[in-house]
Length: 261
Image (cartoon, rainbow, N blue to C red; front, top):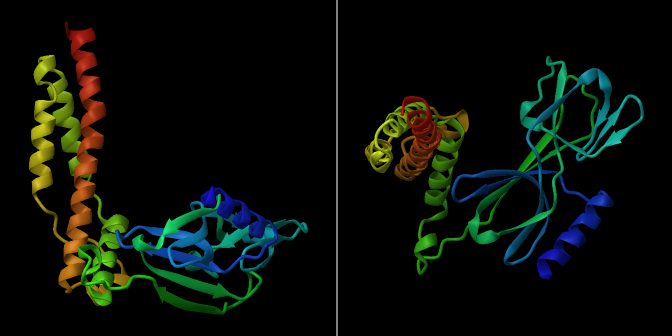
């Protein structure tokens, strides 16, 4: 009941445009959530998540504000301007649409980064951006989940974030698909065996730190960044193996049953 009431209140606030500026929530597991944080208490963060990036031609936009854009035809749209993607030379303006209000436990959050931008025309030579970070995570040596210091947890979260964003393992998908399809061509009872063996062996080989971003440079030599990256990359390898193996296994079984036999 409290969750429903919170969402109703937050939804009403959105209608009245009582919105904060663009926020980026970084979870301890490295996941980033583009959002508008409405409020928070000792336990929860109340926010509106933002959709995937979209774009509109600059020629259609008159003015960009914190949480809305005014088009040249006079229409005002509740879009959130995507600061990181703005390029004065580009013919496009990138933005995100508002999704349904949600709540998030603060135990899962490392920090909230807030970025403000003053209203401007997309044809201006420069834009004024102010940024502020609010760390939510607090060390608690009595709780194993929070025994790391703030800096150590920052390294860990940034490592997992970097792997989520930059690490790819197409060979895991390909290997899963080949072993899954090959297994499907065998007897039905042993069909999953090749893919299972491949997934287990592939998952046991921990990946090294691969591609990273500029924002990761201060942490590249930190132990917790490396461990966080390798852990998240390993999860992606396992997921890719399964995504390749399961559909291919089904296809192999069907081919074997209907076309060969």
